[in-house]
Length: 341
Image (tube, rainbow, N blue to C red):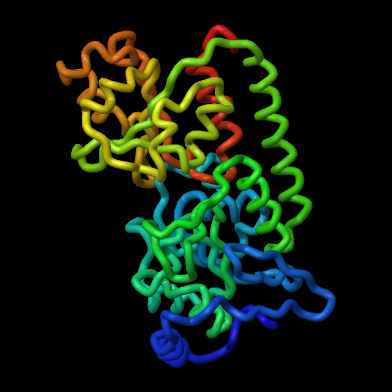
């Protein structure tokens, strides 16, 4: 089936608004001779590549560029950090395309104005009735979609708090990039990217054979409020382990779970990692406020990571499922085991 139905914008908006949120998964049939990939239970044709792509969230945007489809990007929303230099050179939102929306994803009407035939999203929140519409709704008006599988919801249209029991390994990331490459018609680029990522991780693991592994807590403090921890059901745990660390909150499910300072004291992490977020100009130094706050809290003075000054800043983009994950493993390994690199 074609990716896009040609219709006036007003017709598309009415059609989307009229779709029922209780619809089952989209019925997608691949074209003659084409194959399809299954993504969060949705069949996504991999025959005729989309021509106009809207990408939501940092990992979705960078995946489109990394897979060689950046010239098809008509819109993008919500960067967590600066784009990697090789992609930033292609990203010119101040010109005609792509149109960039810094505050998460725009309204569905605004996205439809861009007339995309495909939406790539790094997080499930894009595909809700409050966001751009469910994937079933988008499919009904001829817009295909792909969602990073670590954020597959329990049902189409569900949000961040209704994630399924998903695979948070790097194999899941490799699978996403491979499948998305097939859909975008850039299989060769996808295979080369995944091969390079696997080689990077294998090289790190080889260097770390037999090392003593420190315990690691990866934390955030949105708005200076409660501490939140990246728990066991997040690719951050995989990155910690591949980088030669031990996830100190391995019994805490989900991602960005709230914890109190007393829990951090109890866990006694050897290392604390703070991912900086969020904005197109926010680098690792964006984590400095959180780091300073932890260091200045007298209650935390005897936590090993704080006592030994082993608090490190990284970027949120690198610990989100996507093209940066292999380099994130290498970067964190150098922080945890500087003697090995």
